[in-house]
Image 1 (tube, rainbow, N blue to C red):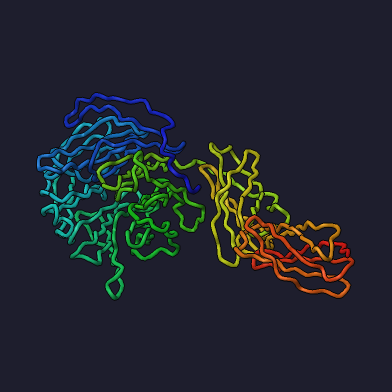
Image 2: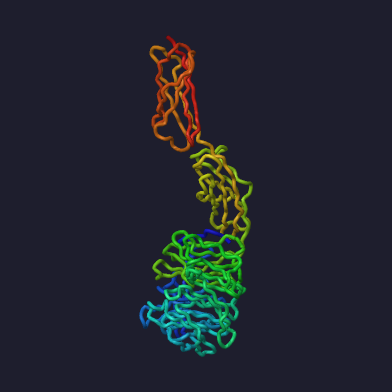
Length: 581
């Protein structure tokens, strides 16, 4: 996989609007809203809704169903928006009241939609309503799932402000007949089934003030009534660490259950007994709070959604096998064109794993976007070749250093220039440097200004792109010397012993700025010996003056020296003057 793919927030292509007139009951003709491609692999459509409750994907007919519960007033009628796989809205299904919860039958022929007093059924081929099965009233919003040949749904009744901790029950519809079970929990419950689950239905309790240590459990749905399997809670002996469930998904092979836990990240469990899997997924990026999870139908990928600020990724797409260390494909959503975070329970894959459908919302949670992401069908290798070199030959503190190298990419050329990232490690620790763009011939130069004398190790990385795997890191160690200094002197060739002499000079230093009040030592050597004169101060522009009355006639040599400091090297200069009477 690739990494650091950021949505560009720009329209690169506009899809042709599609309108469809269908005369079925509960079906409203819809003109497709504008959609745009934020990346070569991502199409984004702004949804005409201000609330959301469920998502379902029909791969056979290449349709995406998005439920808008629309329950601001008692008589509001929710809708199910129908989009194609290109991000165009093709129809709208209208409910008798708020629409909460969607599920597809095992054969994909029927779409079930939860309503306040019914469970509606639609033919997925024609999008016509085929019937509504009366259900016990629900005012808190239903979760729907299809398992064991039966349509399962939750039921809760309370004032809206009390739904979070009201009792919710598990019911089902079998052959058009509503039935109830004896299973219920305090607070909302999330349901998960799907092809990988077989005749198992997974149920997760949502944390609330009356249930601080929620449970996960599974049911065998193959018989006439559900049989509960293993269950698990997550709080420790002190009562801390209870599950904060946002989403759950079953792997394509049915062996694992992934859980989006807002307090923990992505938990990977063994689906049989709900114990921790041997190898977990790596933590989400710092600052990202888990909100969604989905396995691709072909078993290749897992998508992990989150709520994160700024450039921190809100979505990671990576190999479903946690032992595969390939870098994740990352998306950070932070603009008004595509939302700011992944919606809980807002991700589903197409059956073949070629597309991920992900919903984002804004900070206020009243605007929504549908993202259709196509991970690369194939990835190619990349490598650094020829080692790294540095210029200049001798690096000095406070002066630019260039780390040069070459990156080779197999397969097709990338659509946009790729970048290599770098870190510098020295006695002060590790510091991330600015990324460097790779030229068409594969060459690049990472620039840095060392801030410490001694050895600095530069480690360069290529984290991959849409079609290239990450390269193995490469490093080079550079010896950083003190910054050189230079003293230049201008002295007369001859001088009079009685009149004295003046020597002017300039002191220059590379690297960090010199401290104010820098002084230079001055020595005078004549036939009587060597003596130290008064130190001379260096002006802000680096100039200085030495005035002296020689004590003897003959050749007199003046030596001016700088002792150096922690970051600047020492230097000296000499001038010889012939002193006459």
